Image (cartoon, rainbow, N blue to C red; front, side, top):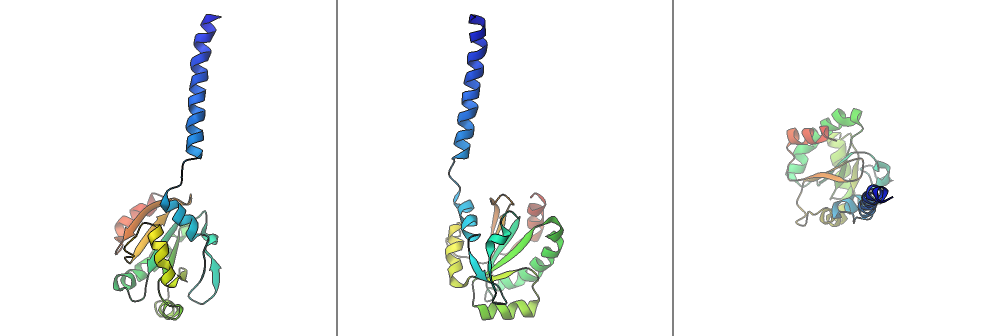
Length: 173
């Protein structure tokens, strides 16, 4: 009988510890970045053509969210390469999404002129609040966020993208 107690008590303690661990993991607070992703995906925004769309359509999909503006020279410089990158990563089910901090008219003209193939949304000046939620307190542009299909921020890039680094990060998704 005593021998059985020495076997069952440690096993019971082990299962209690495992239960507590998973209970704490389940109720751990979400990171500010994951809350920012969740908030972003609740937004409805007009696209470059003026049609309002829900960003919830991208939930569960790996995303590269690029905050930009037509008046931001580094933003404009990286757009053609982002456009080419969208073609590369489409087969891997990765979506690039542009969030424009500009007027609808400027974004529409830009999209037409440069033939951008990925979705460009018009957030206007309201996008600065989104930037801050992601931790970009200065509101610097370009600002790009890599989001996994789990809705977690994998990496953030402030300033011009280094595309070799970005391709490595995308490959790790």
